[in-house]
Image (tube, rainbow, N blue to C red):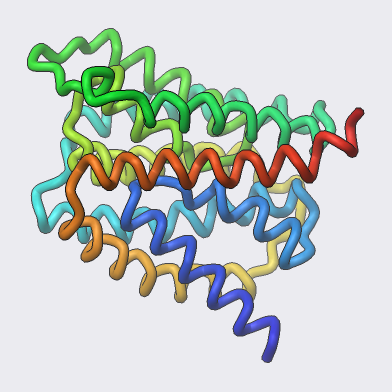
Length: 250
């Protein structure tokens, strides 16, 4: 019963961050599965792609109802990302799990700092550059497969700062890309370890509820407040991961 309550609570939190921020699900899921549920990093990576991918799909439907999804950018960005995610997934097995967590955390710090920059750095672009869409999709996809994350914590700032989408539209569009990248990354990781189907089902079910609540909350918040919340969330968790893993390597 205690394990069921823990999994449900964690799943709810993951869904809430996905619905509210358009990302952050994998940032939470991988460490939660490793440190709180007790899975190996390799098993957590594979399970996180399933959990985040399914909950993101639910978030897409909810954001679509509000007109907050740019489908053309999502499919181009995500299509390129899928190819790179599948290829990169085969390389993570050659690196120590602690090193992957440290790389994960350092990248989160950089992204969080960029998101905290002033409004000018996040000014929406009027002329869409498709080369930036392709480049952003390739970079995020490669990191998705290599680190075993859905990529939302990278997709949202990339869509805002590089592509030029408004923050709220970037959140909805990000979820489409997360679904695509998670599916490709999962294909690359299948067969590496056994999946705990029961645990995943609990996470997904609770996550659906959290995603619904997150989307409703995002609709009420100002874009500036949403961006700041995303940045602070990413930075805070990055610090926790660094504290836990640096000592194991050095």
